Image (tube, rainbow, N blue to C red):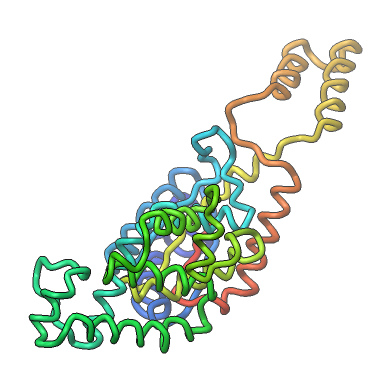
Length: 319
């Protein structure tokens, strides 16, 4: 069995089969969570990543691939070792309004309320007529559901519940939130802080921004909320290979430069070898991380392993 087609002592296809059968089809959607680590050649890991996402999508998981080697629009490292940046990267492409709409649709289905085909959930009059009730009754039912279930679900962070509840209500009643408040709320999910946005957030009962101290709770809440938006769970493939490119400190760079120059001067190094040593010290396009960033990522992964039982319906695969 070649290393390119094996994970540890298990063939790649066999490992993927176990992931699909025992995890994606059963353990994860029943509320479990897991962390898996995979190593191998670049081609091997690319295949694992692609196949995992295909499996996740085929079973209706929200899936995302995060690459520590992929710089942002400003040319900076993604810094996935910081928990809040990891959360923002995972949820970067989430259409919060669309998913809030799905949450409302799921609520209607759970109450056996018929939504006519082609009718948006904000068209309460049409939905009310189809179910022979008054539109105000439907809105009142959701308000009671919001207070009794959404706001009391302590498994999710309070700010998360407030944010998604406000978005869901706005899908039913567009007048429930001003366009400005809605924009501020959507930017809050992205980690942005628009000028004057704090007052708008307070109106939605949100009093803190997403940062290092609460990002883990936000991710846990997101995992628990996904089934309400129609997903079976969350699959994250996290490629950490770039963290192995550790940037030397200034002292290390100076010591290597002096060694190259002294080796060349004494004849201990060939001119070609000394030239290569100096070239290796020059800035390159390769993504590098500091020793501290590397250790922070190791610590973050260690904490995910130790606290994976605090999550629900979440699978993290680390390359």
